[in-house]
Amino acid sequence: MYNRKIRGPLIEGNKSLGQITQEIASPMEVKQGLWWYIAFFISSLAAVFGCYAIYITVYKGIGTWGVNNSVAWGWEIVNFVWWIGIGHAGTAFSIFLLILRQKWRTSINRAAEAMTVFAVMCAALFPALHMGRVWDAFYIFPYPNTRGPLWVNFNSPLFWDFSAITAYLLISASFWYLGMLPDLGTIRDKTASKIKKAVYGLFSMGWTGSSRQWIRFESLSFILGGIAAVLVVSVHSIVSTDFAVGIEPGWHTTIFPPFFVVGAIFSGFAMVMTLMVLIRKIYKLTDYVTDNHMDAIARILVFISLIMGTAYVTELFISWYSGNQYDMFTMFRNRVTGDYTIQFWGMIVCNALIPQLFWFRKIRRNWIGLLSISLIINIGMWLERYNIVITSLSKDYLPSNWVSYSPTIIDIGVFVGTIGLFGTGVLLFMRYIPMMAISELKSVANIGTKKED
Amino acid sequence: MNRTYKIGIFDDEGKFISAIRTLKEQKFEIFDVFTPYPVHEVFHLLKRKSRLPTAAYFFGLFGIVATLGFLYFTSVVNWPLIYGGKPFNSFPSFIVVTIVVTILTVTLASLALFSARSKLFPGRDNTIFDLRATDNKFVIVVDTNPTDMAAAMRVGDIMNEYGASEVIDKEFENVQA
Image 1 (cartoon, rainbow over the protein chains, first blue to last red):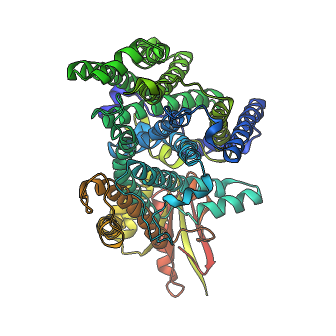
Image 2: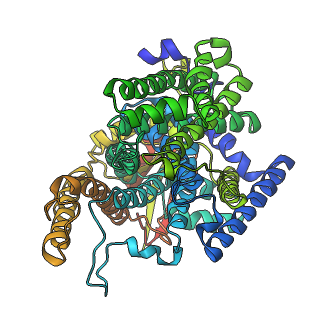
Image 3: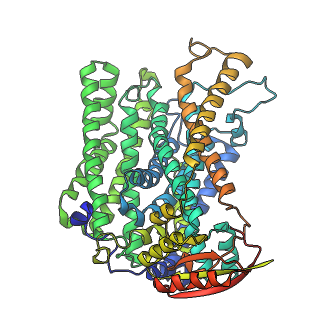
């Protein structure tokens, strides 16, 4: 096989099928270490802080945020785009690689999809809160109502965004769950505890692994993979139209849809890497997520980083080349120089320069290097969204509208809360759901090993 | 009524497939086989096919027509409003919602169809012939005819001949699969 010579075995250590089940399911059988309880405590504490901030937001209104008449979109939209971007990689990862039949996805896709679901949940919170009167959020559903019926504006990117995110959440959750069915069946058949048997029996929905179930399972995976691939590209393009359709300088550019999609995959892959480095280290799953897996993700990241760098330069070049003075002002006087220099250059350093270290094999194979660079990328991607949202709004066409923006403790609280929610979700995932797709791992167990010949 | 099934349990995928091939050649009716992961040769041997992709195509077609129809109805017929001087039926800006809703329709409808055809839903209690089939064993299940014991014996012999680690007779009441 072609892949074998380059990448070596997908799973190291000549595992038998039973061994794979045993090793992946064992974190669910044994008691978690002390670190788990500490991490869970910290995450829940952050989530509680978030709940408090949300309570204040709902009770008093979004006046408690740092937003004002000029900068009407503050941290919340920055965070929303950031989370949605992270949420992209899970699906991008598992779906693009599924369609391209890249077998190395099997060790990582479950965790990546889990991350997607939690990240999209965090993301969806922000637009809902941003409506101000969150109890009226259902107005955005196009349902026959007593107000006319007055329908929502189907021409508005904000409505497109709503439909895209709702669809994305439902579809990524179903795709994740579908992939989980066989493994839930495995746990049901393996566990000795009666309660677990009942619970996993309920959730595995009667999975038996018969040939009839398997063929439908496979064809449904490909159907969902094929159409969700379109969705992955379209969701973040739609998020970018929230900006690109507006006439603010710095937003009104046609580069936005591809720029956003690539950026989303960038931050998401970085988050996948953060999680996988930790999971393989903590649960000693290095045989399943090998150095080669991490190497492959790092190579993808360095490539995307180059695209991001090109996009940043293109944006600057086009604003100069177009001769539009407002655009020039935003780009050169309000980003490259001016009040937001730190955010702009932070973004360049974190997204375009530091990931170039992945050209070195030593760094691609060093877990501290991988972990720190993946975290830096996510910080950089947050700064990028900050740049886009805040700089364009704070100084637009009318100097009398110019204000500076800074977040309040409530803004920070909501953000910290979503990080806590994400952390809590991931920790529960590690404990109660097989972290890797056991059945898929079994199907690739022999690839690249001597057993195959 | 209780029925007896002959269950052959294999450790090795290759031996398992040759056993199926021989059983098929000798015209034994295989009830079903159970594997820990999808084995493609099994699909060929047992002539398993899925028409889900065709169904998904029609779900998609329905999704497109229904969504565009709905958008046309709300924006042109039911409550026309001018947004930014654009025509009521501003088709290009309907495309985005149409794509997204179509994808959602295909996903949910295919899932529902999958769940109905494969009989997988919460609370469903499909018969598990051998608990190890979801772990590390490949399982062939043959429905034996109580009046023809010789055939049942022959099935067991074939399974043993091809290296089954165990051959069991089990009785089941009301098999659900």
